[in-house]
Length: 392
Image 1 (cartoon, rainbow, N blue to C red):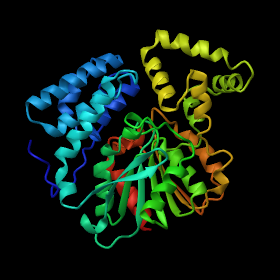
Image 2: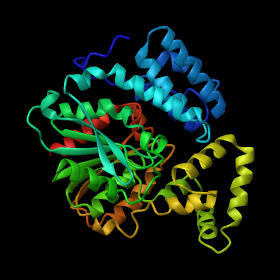
Image 3: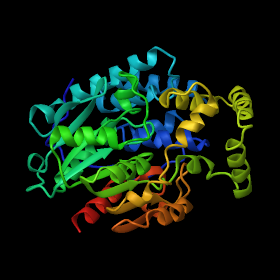
Image 4: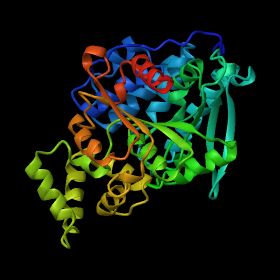
């Protein structure tokens, strides 16, 4: 295998594609291309028939084998990593596939670690550890450091796919600490550490370990809740970038429903009769395979035994009741066509963050190729927005 040269200039692909009708599958395929290193033309050509999670795994695994046979390691890593994504958590092949993709990633990008541009750490946490990648400004052409940045993903992230954004921020002048917390990446898949809404706990462990003060924190997707939550209780954080509009996980789930329907669902789930929803969800799981995958994965990642227990877990992921403790400068980055998170939720977040020292919203659209979830089609534009705000 020919390794990737760490002196190669960072380049982000730009654009978005309508590859399949299902919005979630379509987003994940764009993610394969723009975040994970998949071949744009190949993914668009070969993945248009994906309709189920089985289709997904079969198609991505075939692309992985083809890329391997042709010596296209960067593409192989993308397909190997994302082939695992829609496997059921009960499938023993899921962890095998994850570990294979991770090992290939660190072998291919070894030059970054051997040259000292990036270092790997394991921060002790509870019964295991939190993996952290550190890229210092001074080691990556960023000159004298402008400060420290904690960086993490969200509900279904792998921190390897944020590797080049980490390097880009380091080149922009910041010492970046990219990490996975409970419920994410290998912390979930290998250590079986489930999500916690108390994100300040893993964040504090990392700040203690590296002896950091006066840091910024960036959280993507669900990280749009997690990062502000950490800032509410951890005052070593001075600036917050919420890379999505995420005031309340449950409200995000309901945001696709008409107002009256959402209100009825919320009343049922708050009533003594909420147990009837388990039967409703189980019926949906029998008729809609993607709903089944989403619920089963959610129950696994959030340590829930029933769909309703999963709903009860995610209802803890809310800024309601704690937002008044967020007194830092806050930047919220949204996307006008985000299929997961409706931008109107910013009104709720705005009202909650009344004590923020400053509050800035940047809403991107398809005109920027950045209108999808976490601005998947234009990483450079959104990272430049972060750097501009951090440098003010």
